[in-house]
Length: 109
Image 1: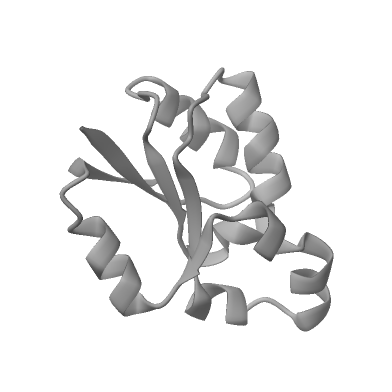
Image 2: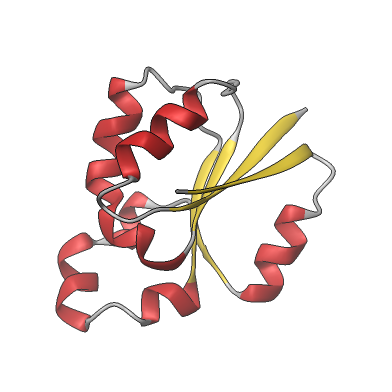
């Protein structure tokens, strides 16, 4: 079984959030980026590498959260190439209830 991590961090707390995830991380776990966290995807990837988190099954973000970013920021981030999928609220709920996950953990620092 796998864990679905729901990550809601500011730039100031992102490194600490990655460190928190690394304590219980297992290969095959997934991450959903909530709020503005998707704007920090490149920093998150660097922190995940520093934390030796590997075997990520998927990294997701919510369409509503991405729509809150400016068009310029969203374009520069090129999120479509860095995320496994961009989810609607309904898809997020469905994913969080998927039987592949034995637990859902929210990290909001």
